[in-house]
Amino acid sequence: MAIKHLSKDSVEPPKVPGSLRFYSMRFCPYAQRVQLILNAKGMPHDTVFIDLSDKPEWYLKIFPAGKVPALIYDDKFLSESLLLADFLDKQYPEPPLQASSPLQTILDKLVIESFGKVGTAFYKLIMTTKEIEKQNFDELVASLIPIETELVERGTKFFGGNKPNMVDYMIWPWFERLDAINPYSNGTFVIPFEDKFPRLAEWKSLMIADKAVAPYYITPEKHAEHFTKRKAGLPAYDI
Amino acid sequence: MAIKHLSKDSVEPPKVPGSLRFYSMRFCPYAQRVQLILNAKGMPHDTVFIDLSDKPEWYLKIFPAGKVPALIYDDKFLSESLLLADFLDKQYPEPPLQASSPLQTILDKLVIESFGKVGTAFYKLIMTTKEIEKQNFDELVASLIPIETELVERGTKFFGGNKPNMVDYMIWPWFERLDAINPYSNGTFVIPFEDKFPRLAEWKSLMIADKAVAPYYITPEKHAEHFTKRKAGLPAYDI
Image (cartoon, rainbow over all chains, first blue to last red; front, side, top):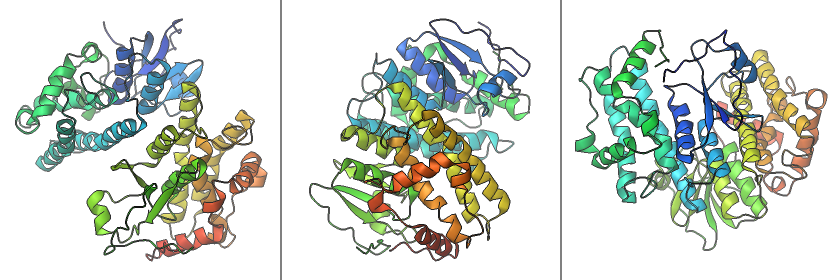
């Protein structure tokens, strides 16, 4: 299905009764986090895609920050990807995506928090220089070491054990994009997953096949195209 | 009791059985958040104060980021003020400091999140210019408007209702410091709480008397002195 992002002069589509109104952008990793939780929970939702380069006036009226992701629940406007993921997990408990012990929950949240370094290193690599620079690439590769170590120490297929939990879904969006470095750099830079991060390599192939991840997966080539256009000042959101 | 912050060549004090080991800094608003939750819960804890300008080697070994606040629980090293506060609230449920409904919980967390703007405006005011600049002061005052509005809309004494909850405790540390602007600027700048933020003015006087807040309260004059010394490159932590 074609996806159209709404821009400045658009009109907000009517809400669908019985569905959560979800504001998103198809290439936003933060919005993808929430989408994955909605998918994992099987929650009916109707998505409105926002053109972040030419934001709808009606959206800025309800949310002056104009960011995504956001949800409307019980007429309340809710934002912030990690808070939304937590909210959905508590409001719709099946399947549970967080540990039952408070200690394991904070340990999981600290993994998600520390993963922020990978996201920062990735955007530095792609967005702050004209071409990819070797030093930034090395920094990004180094930022993955603690994540591989974490998975080795857990000794399970997923961070969540036998199946994905909140950690898996919250960090996944950036792994989809890490594979875009190869086509984006025409094969000059490739993260050595098999050699250096064998557990993450296995985890990635399991995640791509996950029932919450698969329907929203974007290929490395499509991600690379999006980054190229965005850097050229011509962001293309619709696919 | 005199408070001594441990520096580079110190040795970590032995842990106290039956107490949570808490790493803090006496003037850190993020550490204060966790202290307030420990106080509210009546949790036995033994605090080790860290000299952030000359960090202990033993602390950097257990936590390379070298930040506070942090806690040891069940031999696990835990950090991040909001995550720690959540963890303590779940691990020690009495008295509960979060709403029982997931919706009210995320609404509360969004208030805490949005309060970040006040913190940013405050540090810009104090730390980025030699003297306080009128424009930065006006921005700080403007950042308080949504917080006053939130309290008016809730129509209760505290953000938590009849007594403080997580919102009250998570934002309190910055209010203690807002009152330091008066002595810090020798009376040139004073936040017009009574005139412009009457509900926050009442809330502040209730909070100062709260049993979790009072034992850890630092006067505006002491805060002002700390900022003056810190800006002079001579941070003084011990009091």
